[in-house]
Image (cartoon, rainbow, N blue to C red):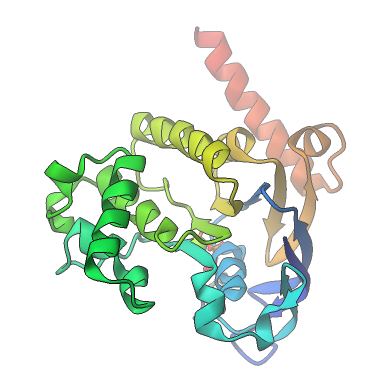
Length: 252
Ligand SMILES: Nc1ncnc2c1ncn2[C@@H]1O[C@H](COP(=O)(O)OP(=O)(O)OP(=O)(O)O)[C@@H](O)[C@H]1O
Ligand SMILES: [Mg+2]
């Protein structure tokens, strides 16, 4: 499981805080969705978990082990990361992108290729059509699938996903959300998923952590947040969503 204790990050020596005193647990096999508006500290929180950003203070534990004193490469091997901007290497094919971590950890070519073939299939990309394509010859949704396959390559225990469906149209997004739910059932990963979309959060989360201005406003099961909002911010968030849902209801 993942445990964050009083996690804090300031990029300017303490004048402002991107993340401030965030404490939370994610139980093994659960999906925690971090929900909040642009700039509230979601990406910074996620990047501290695999140490792409070093915390200013606080503690991170993965399976009871102190992540901040662990070997960084070993740590990152246990964590799959799907970047907000996808970040596929443009000069590498889809399969080569998926094989990056297996290559780094020294798998022989046949084993790497077998793994990328398996994973491209898993994320709905027929390897015979897509394995040798460069990212620029893939649609946004297809690139996002490659990004997810890449994160899964070394079979990590943890998956950190930073607005993976943010740039997609509603239909593709809906489809990928459904597929992620299926994947989750099949793979039993512990997932932290970042989004600014409450409906996406409700669909994917076991628990939701609402962030605002670097702080965690509330964390709990969706229905706890809905029925017992701890702060006016959380109450407003759900009220806003309810009005949107009513709007859809009124037109159907
Ligand atoms: N490397 C950095 N140097 C200075 N400030 C930074 C850096 N990275 C992030 N910040 C600041 O920290 C705050 C939180 O940024 P962060 O990227 O975590 O937000 P976010 O919630 O992921 O936003 P978005 O939804 O737009 O991706 C912002 O005010 C941002 O400008
Ligand atoms: Mg972000």
